[in-house]
Length: 178
Image (tube, rainbow, N blue to C red; front, top):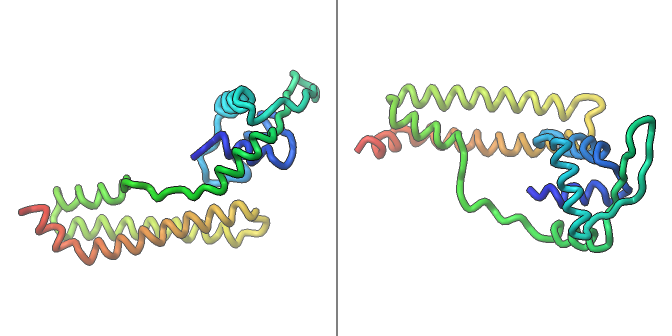
C-alpha cells in the first residue's frame, strides 16, 4: 500500500490539514488499518520535501496553527501514474489459514483436521453475515459497502478453498505422514 499516494488522492479534491486528512482516510477506507497521526504528518513532510504537495495556508480555529496541504502538479502526475499502474499479484501466498490447515494435518488426526476446517467455515460464514448487514444497513456509505464487498469476496474465496481442503484432507494427511 502506498500511503503517500493514498494521501495525495485524498488531498486531490481540496486542501486539508493533517487532522482532516487522517479522518478522511479512516472514513473513506473503512476496514483499512487506521493511520496514526504521526504517520500522516511524517508522510505530509515527505510529500512536501519531494515536491508532490505544498502548504496551502494556515488557519487557527480556536487552537494551534493548522497547516493545510494541497497536491502540486507533480503530485497529480505521480498520483495518475500510480493509479494507472496495475498492482501485481502477490508472488507468495502468506495466509494463516493455509498454515493452520497444514499444521493441523501434521499434528492431528483426520477427524480433528476436518473439525478445524468446519469451525473455520462457521467463523467465515458468521463474518459474511455481519458484512452483509453492514451493506444493507440504512446510512451505509458507498465506501463501507465497497469495503464489505471486498471482504465478502475474500471470505467467499476462502470458503471455496476450505471446501477444497476438506475434500483433500485424507490425501493431504497421507502425504504429510509418509
